Each structure stands twice: as structure tokens, then as C-alpha cells.
Length: 211
Image 1 (spheres, rainbow, N blue to C red):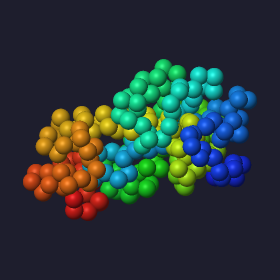
Image 2: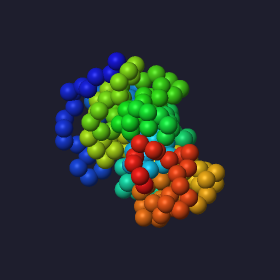
Image 3: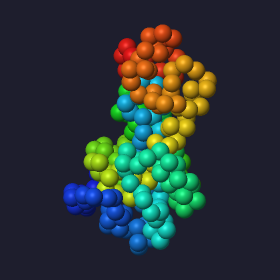
């Protein structure tokens, strides 16, 4: 069972994320530390996607940052680098699960799955946000705005964002007309207009109210 650890200083990453949280958790002493983040809590459609990333302390890609601070080409480039230089696990909660247990708990479940889907066990998880997912097998620490403070969480934010964007582009081919390749399922004016015209698709989240 994971618990929130009070080891860490609350002030970090004022400009760019760094590796201090990972170092304090023992990354340079051989402990396996992963960063965890999710993408897709706000959209009207599509899954919530989480990623867990273990960086190699000796081979950290340049330019890692909160995915929201990066351009689409930069995120794609960094994902390609991370695929070669880091360990990555992905966890997904589909719209039906989101409707059944709500978006918060679906996000927590996606994060737990991401950690479990890493191909090696971790000693410690750094979680973006203010909640530690229940039922993790390792200890963990939740960091508010962690994607802008921890390099591992920043890497996870990139992986989860690009992975979800690709899922939505594929969904756009299966359910054409909603424009998901552009807005990725978020509640834009164009998305709401498409739902008014076409109705909801199987990929929409019914618990999010009327689009």
C-alpha cells in the first residue's frame, strides 16, 4: 500500500523540473523511482491515460518539461527519445469505467495500472497531483504540479499526453465528424456542436452531463 511521504521539501521546480525529488528518494543509490501523470481528465470523450516513467539518471533527455509547456513536435520528439532511454508503463481507464466510478477514481486506477505495467518493479513513485492512488505495491509521494517540478513526472506527462492524443486520432477515424484529431475530446464549441448534430458516440462520457 502506498502512502504519502513527508520526506520532500515543498518548494521545487520554480523554473524547470529537476531531478531533486528522485535523488532524495534514492535514485542515485540504486533505488528505482518512477514518475506518474495522467492526461484526459477534462474531455467529454475518450479515455483517461496515465503513464509511469523510470528515467535513467545518467541519460536524462534534454528539454523534459510539463507537457503543457511544450509544442506538439517537441512532445513527439521527446516521446521517441524516452521510448529508447527510459522504462515506460501505460494505464488506461475507458469512458465506461469513468462513468461507473467517476473521473477521479478512474484517474487513480489508470495511474495504478501504469505503475504495474512497467516491466520492472519500482521502489518509489512520484505522483502528479494531491492524491496517491490506492492499492499501489510501492511507497509514493503526491506532488502538486509535479509535472513542472520533477523530471520523471514531466516525462510521464509527455508520454500520457502523446499517447492519449494518438488514441483520439484513431477514434476520430472510427467515429468521424466529432473533430477529435483537433480538440482531442475536450468541450470546445465545435465539439459541442458536433454532439448536437450527431448525438453522442460510444466514446463519450455520459456522466459528464449534456455536452
